[in-house]
Every structure is written in C-alpha cells, then in structure tokens.
Image (tube, rainbow, N blue to C red; front, side):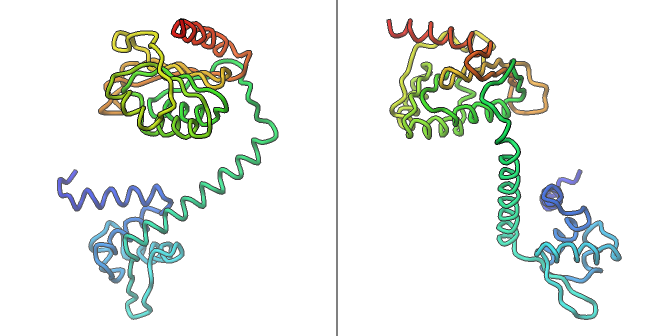
Length: 264
C-alpha cells in the first residue's frame, strides 16, 4: 500500500462512497472528478482505475444521484459537486433511509413485540453492549441502577442517563473515582451514589444494570480478539426483561440486597 497521503485519502473516499451505495466505477469516477475539478472521460480514465468506456456509465449513475453535472460538449465534460454539498446530499439520503427503515420496522413490530423476554440473551462486542445499555436506559420510567467499570462509562451512556434523569427517572450509580463522580455530578446532579459491590480492578466484571426492576444486563470483560484495537479487553453480556425472567429475578435480588445494605 502506498504511503502517499493523497493515495490513502483517495482509497478511503472510494471505500466510503461504495458503502453509501455507489458502484466501484462510480465511486472511482467521482473521486477522480473531485481531484480534477472537471474533466472528460479520458481525463478520468487517466487518473482513476476506470476504463474510459465505463466512465460514461459511471457518470450517468453519478448524474442520476445528483453528484455530477454534464456539459454536452464534444467530448462531454463532467463536473463534480462540492465536498460540502456531497456531505449534505448523503446525510439527507441517509436520514431518509433510516427514517423509512425505522417506520417500517415499527409497523412490523407493534403488533407482536412484548416487554417480557423469555430466557437470557447474549450480546458480544464492547460497542454493541454499550448500545444495548443505552437502549435499556432509554426505556426507563421509574429507576435506573447502574454499576460499571469506569472504562466502560462512555459519553453516550452518560447522556442517556442525564436524559432520563431530566424526565424524573431516579438514577442510582455505584461509586467511582472522585474525578468521575465530579463529572457525573455536573451532568447528572440528581443521581444518587451507593457503595460498589466489588473492586472492579480485581475482577473481570464489566457492568450491571437494572431498569425499572424488570430489565437487567450483566457483562464481563474478556481477552480481546485483536479485531477492535486499541482496546485491551473486549466485552460480552447477557440481558433479560420481564418480572419473571430468571436473570431479572436474580439480579433484582442482588441489587435489592446491595441497596438495602447501603441504606443501613
């Protein structure tokens, strides 16, 4: 792989454009036109790995997506929209697709989805576990009890705790370092602290979460596979929902014991 920064930027741009739905030739053509400002099919072919005869199809694809204008000269010339407009174009398209997707999924799920989850469900990967934690916290109506290793307390989780706190949900957090507690006091001033169940540095435990005493999640830190550098440890979790769910019953009993001991 070339160490030239421009080659790396070009490769990254092509990869992202393909992820956003462009064909390989269209992505390469667009990136070439951005670097050229404007050009003919021959110009594009000379700077991009696209046969000249395929530039025409690629340019038609880009024109249909609103990314390229065509000058009907001989030969035809192509002009790429600005990078700022490109960004806005894909943001709007992405937002539209996400909205359409969630609306469709909501219509499908509304008739059959229940809050009672039979059995215990497994989640792997630190980022995915964090997303599940945010999802569960966002459903809170009355209370969130959360114990966590500080390295797992992301800004997004703090924001979700602050959001539900603002709407009147009781937040109870296990004690952490003074620095983190000061930060939480600023962002979630109504949160109540209680003594942690264990010394996180001496265990592989990741976090324990209880929402409204009917949704729970517990995780452990495991050796990383090397797929998510630079994190030294990855994470796996189990969660359950419903008043009679086995995991909920066990963790609710443990949390109740812990909180009652703190009150004493």
